[in-house]
Image (cartoon, rainbow, N blue to C red; front, side, top):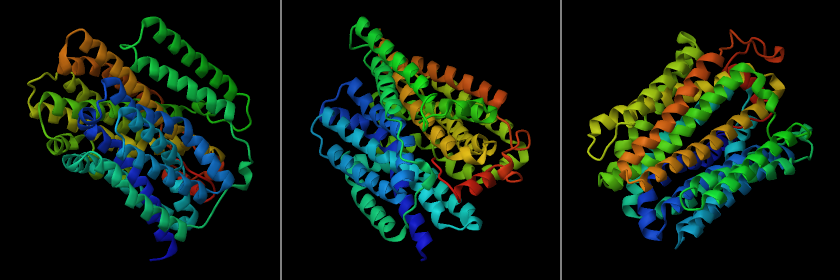
Length: 476
């Protein structure tokens, strides 16, 4: 096997770990709760803190890779992710496990930001599409098999899901270290937006903390914390308009297709994280299913990605990106409406309809939304635009999970029970996805309707990305 293919294998190890983690940890949470004595807020933090850390660091990690070497920063990320896995696996209490999840988020940020850039650096332009397809297939496959793998491992011991990361991290790091050449961006400079990073971290953390702790803390404290968070986010917005190397270029959202695709990503991915967090708990706590049975039952929420995503290019060519994405968002909305009817005795047949509709939405929308977001971007903006899109997805998960959790716990406190509270809180997700569907139809346009930058004229959709990938950086 040539060096370039070994590089692809090594980078895919890191990607596979991140995507697998997206689902396996959710399957393990009911067992973790009983084993380490976590309350509901601490349980939610085990997922939220990971998403928050990824959110605030993914773009900065990509920039650090451009400045100091993508391979070097990627390998550091893998090492930190492995350390976080060790801390999580050995945790005897919820606080230590939350610390482990923070470390996994810190390590995961450069893995997410740089894996594709490392791959595209070693492939000639004509072979980039093939490498990109394999890389994307690994991502979809990891998400799809996550519930099944997670359920099987949790049956053994929930700690196994973290210990299993270590040989994968070691093997992936070894392959990347030996096969991948170092690369950087001489034009990246040496400026990091530390004030923006601080304001973003404080703002997101305070808002999410206020939502999660809204039931446990006094109303005055929660309101004060929320105001601090909002003020910090306003400060972040102001900072980003003044620094030379911002984390987020807000002018990107003036591009209508990019705004529409970003909205679709925010609302669909955000609802995914909430669904994959609460539904396994419902199946295990309320219905009494084992983790492996639960993994099989929620598999329809992710498995359609494996079967649908490979055909996304043909579907876009036949139907257009806007109709395809809007239809997918509408299917997801229908699936969530089904899940608002869940009670303690709902048959799996009803759940299956909701899960499958939502899974089809992920399959139809997840790949096209990246194409729609990037196709109309000027060539010199694709790097930062794709990084912001990655950040958008992580922020979506943290915010949607926190908001849904706040409503869920409020309903539980009012005596609605787990199933009733879950059904009630799902209406927030319905509202989010309804808004996302409207924005998708209103703003998303295909390359034929919104022409790309002249530098990549005649290279719509994936070809525009391939042109840029060969020369600069890309963040999922």
